Image (cartoon, rainbow, N blue to C red; front, side):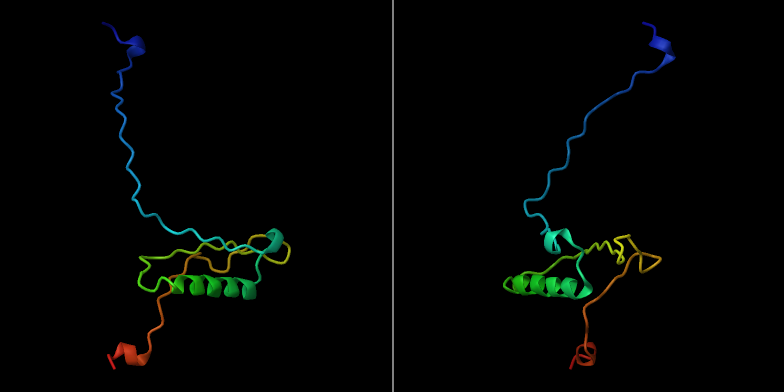
Length: 101
């Protein structure tokens, strides 16, 4: 049997999609009133409120957390405060923690 137009048939087999794990991540949305952008002070208070809510689950640990911020100027135009666009922040350790005291 001749192949149409000289093309070879593709073997198409569907892969099963990976099933999602039972426990999914927690999505937290921080929003300003009536859709207005948050000031830095409001963002700080919202993050403190998140920390207060999570404190009741003190027996759990966060595997990791990623925060995406869209920053805007006074005209509502998006701005970048860092050329790389990425910061990695580690928890504070005191000198006593560092030296095992």
